Image 1: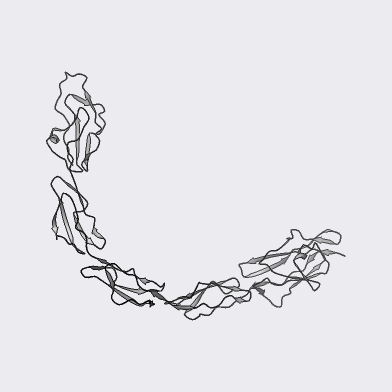
Image 2: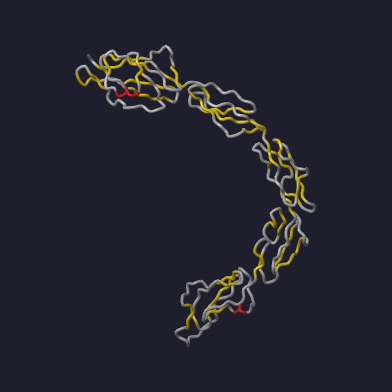
Length: 367
């Protein structure tokens, strides 16, 4: 008697159908056949059964090396799938050295569309086996308990419709130097409003009215009660425009530095909800006579000055009878907040001390 070998290979196409194929048996000896590359086992989610001579073929029979000529094997669809054509044959028969073609083709089962539930609906990825449905409440309602996504299973949609309950907000936040217009409740319904007011003499910054929002919190952020800006303290400066303290929202001041001092920042500032805008300026003191290396001095024009304003640049030179060691270095120094930058100029005596010298060529430069 001849024998045929049986094995099953399964593949899916775009998650819409399952196709189960039977490989062709090849002869390797008289009256016996074996399937090349036959799998030893199949793992979930492929669940199936085969009937051999009207008996259920269990998992251990997958390793059966051969089937007798004329044997018939019956297939069924895996879990979550159904035959595309109910009239298609589900059996194959071993004829000679190969199996007959399998007509059975399977597709994912449909769970149907989920209907809207009270005060909510589903956002679905589809309605076939394996698809999911996420519950979403209508505006003004929120899910009671933890959100649970439903899945299309073999017997239909799992789980049940959730419950959407009205949004509730707890008591609104307390603000400093202010209070609610009305006595607060323990909770508020969706879209219900509350209003704030500030203590006498203070300005309210932001929105005075808040609403209970769909996420269960009051929005926008609560306002602030603003008492004004502190009087700026700017040494060596004087106010030339604007009012004297106290400073309320919108008040301005303009400053000028005293003689010899230089201002950094803006001279015009305004009292805003976040304080002075921009920040108050500074008046920087001037620089006095710098300490220079041996044989280096400032020009005669500068030596007559007692101080130089912040940010000014001057030049240095060798004293009469000396010359630079390196004529390429910078001869400029800068006054930066009461201090001078380092002088790079160094000088030495002329080798011929009897040489006559003309007047210095360097001059004072103020910028």
